[in-house]
Amino acid sequence: MRDAITNLIKNYDVTGRYLDRNAIDELKSYFESGTGRLAAAGVINANAASIVKQAGRQLFDDQPELIRPGGNAYTTRRYAACLRDMDYYLRYASYALVAGDTHVLDERVLQGLRETYNSLGVPIGPTVMGIQIMKGIVKEQVAAAGIQDTGFVDQPFDHMTRELSEQDI
Ligand SMILES: CCC1=C(C)/C(=C/C2=NC(=C\c3[nH]c(/C=C4\NC(=O)[C@H](C)[C@H]4CC)c(C)c3CCC(=O)O)/C(CCC(=O)O)=C2C)NC1=O
Image (cartoon, rainbow, N blue to C red):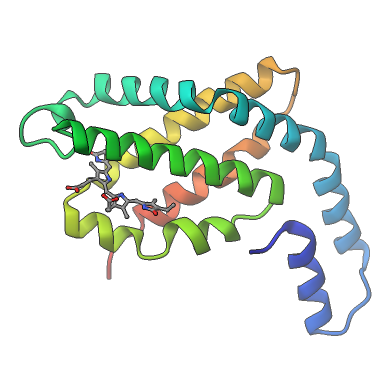
């Protein structure tokens, strides 16, 4: 697992450099967004169950065929598996937000996921929609917690979206 600081130090150490102006600027921006990152983790922790529930409801309202016979989230077991996956995405997004780095997502969530989904017929498009709906909800709640610039919240959700959407070669 990596975070913004260890990642930066590793990059400088590889080439034996002192932390230069760029490094300091990068660290500054990480520390300046620290309050927001902690607020986001707090908001997610306090509301995880309702965020997942609300996002699931919105997703199935938009894509009702998912929960009809023949849909991938049809049957109680698969419906629950779908919401559980959303909960994984949210929890790991909160880790990545605090770390300021998406490495934890690559390592713990995304590795092999597309292959698993393809073999089970879990549709990627609606999964990505669910991730983006959660991003929107978290951003609203972070803004409501008094954080003005919520742009940093996008990073983990957009990273998972990009990596999941990437086409097989
Ligand atoms: C922490 C990292 C981690 C992830 C990400 C993860 C995902 C994951 N989701 C799975 C299944 C599943 N995932 C879904 C999800 C959905 N179906 C839909 O139609 C929706 C679009 C979507 C919800 C948004 C469903 C329905 C299954 C069960 C599929 C089946 O068994 O047929 C499976 C197969 C094994 C199982 O059922 O538990 C894995 C490994 N597991 C992990 O350990």
